[in-house]
Length: 309
Ligand code: CP
Image (cartoon, rainbow, N blue to C red; front, side, top):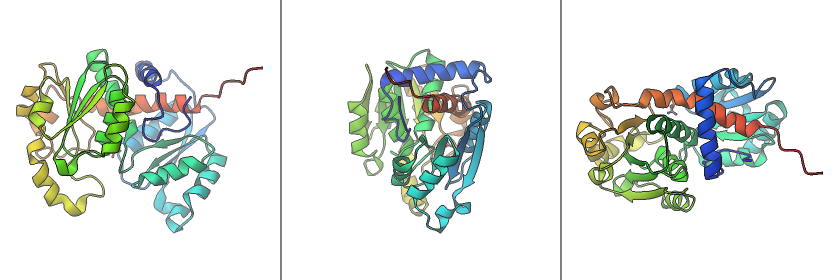
């Protein structure tokens, strides 16, 4: 049983498969679980959000719990109270803590000192809740995950990292095509490859066309993520050959879908034709944040098994 969910590395392949299957059940019946009845979840935001904020708040409510939304600027964290003390105190009130922030070590520090489970709702390095929703979307579209080829094109960012970790763990061949200057962190690729489930793998390349060939899904994300605004022009120049458009989609399998975690910039990293076209699965992806995160919260907050007598 996992204690925190910070990168996705915490889950075994079997636990990940079970979580996705449970999410399908929770999607079919949104009132199927009251796992958080009488319990509260703190959701701490240091960065803007639409999907994460609403899906977690609604998800906690649908599980029978109470979401406590905290803007970091309105807490004592903004005046220097430590992550350690914040985690210790929040853990006396609530039954789980979700955190969206920039530096990944902040989430790790909270988890280290929290008596209740901590969920990474996005850091600069990882976005594992997004990857859970992405896997759920692929599972719905193709009826399986193992053996699929998922190609990510663009910036080797937090979304690419989490797709590598959780995609490979689910048995997917994850191919990430980026300019060399924006490649994913090699250590994340190494860990993702080492933790890959049966049939799963990670391949890094600079060739978007080669990466797209034979793919079941093409995925991209914004070229200028939160925190990268200072180098926007340089990133746009480097990433121009990595646009997800009709020409790239034609190289993928005939049944391939287009994915994007949103928010999108149509005409930049993805063409409007693809984003709003018949092969786009991005709206299912967005909705699936809710169902996948409900399954995750259930898993994290389930009572510990009784010790053997
Ligand atoms: N995909 C995602 O995390 O969206 P938000 O930034 O709106 O939460």
